Amino acid sequence: MLVVIEPRIWSRLEKLKIDPFYYCFRWMTLLFAQDFALFDTLRIWESIFSCENRMLFMSYFAISIIITAKKFIL
Image (cartoon, helix red, strand yellow):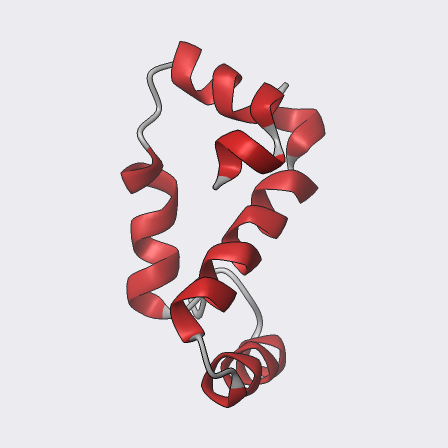
């Protein structure tokens, strides 16, 4: 999905040979809990669990984190 939404970021990560596994695995397995404060994590979890398509929501949320870090990536 990132290749469609932000192709410049995708190509930069590909050029650096950074596999999505390295930056998304922890987010997906821990439901973003390790990277956010407790209160923020609870709000994220509430959104995840209230969403009908949880995996799609988590994918878009992960992409939004990557887009937020766009200046540092590029």
